[in-house]
Image 1 (spheres, rainbow, N blue to C red):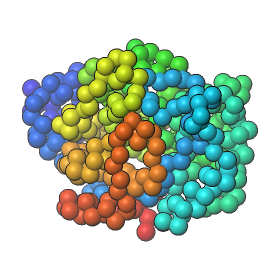
Image 2: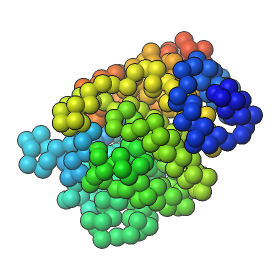
Image 3: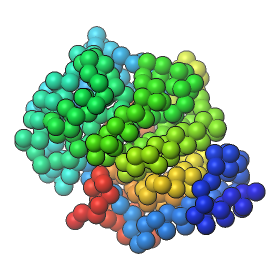
Image 4: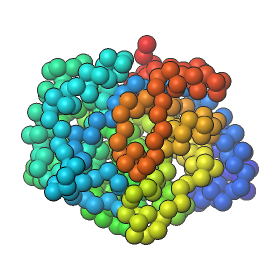
Length: 356
């Protein structure tokens, strides 16, 4: 049965959610990787693996959603809670540009004190001072901002875009199944709201990415349902530039402390999930390897399980680090491991256009 499904995918036929579940039940990980890699190479004609030089800046760590999987957030009363002043953010951007960076990933928490005017001023000041791509605010942050600012989603997106927002990261997706979201992030936006933000952004020519955080309370069927929802959205609006799956990091989180979910996703489970994502998501050109959570060796293996992109140099990363997972690579390291894997490294921008 596995071979029949994989043959179908290699011939360009779309596989069903039920068939994707069957692939998860397969133990032939090498075959899954081989097929996923062949599909990836069909989409990316040259043996090129891309990456981007950027920094992840968290403008605040204050958040009211209390997500059970997050070790990063703080309450406003906590001693180490913060909202970075503009000059701190500007200094981080200056350092990014000095290292050849072309983009910042700007995300934070659901801070009830930061309404639309805060982001408009912040984005405008960044754009006035720097020539940098602003990849900012996940869908839950945008939904939250719209609600506390008493605006519609369209009004919020239009004002953010006018202020300088260039693209939207796919954070906050976790698993796009509401029964799962109720267990791990009940105070965050729903599946439909997450997808609505992305669909409205695409209609305004704001590109976005899609993500999946797996390996906690979800089932294999939930993972497949997540993939189905983003494939369906891509069919409708076509604005996702990449898909990035990564495993839950349990360290110092409520899920690990209160629900005793302490076992990390194995390398094989990660690679299998990546491969099936490539096979199922026939309308996505780019899949990113998660070396930030898996380390460089699994990151290299991912290039033979459907990934064609090594993501970001992550000159700064705080959310995964807060859970105790620390993997660091500079641009030279990324280029070396891509070359050692048999591919040609190539810088890109957020739209996956190659840049020098």
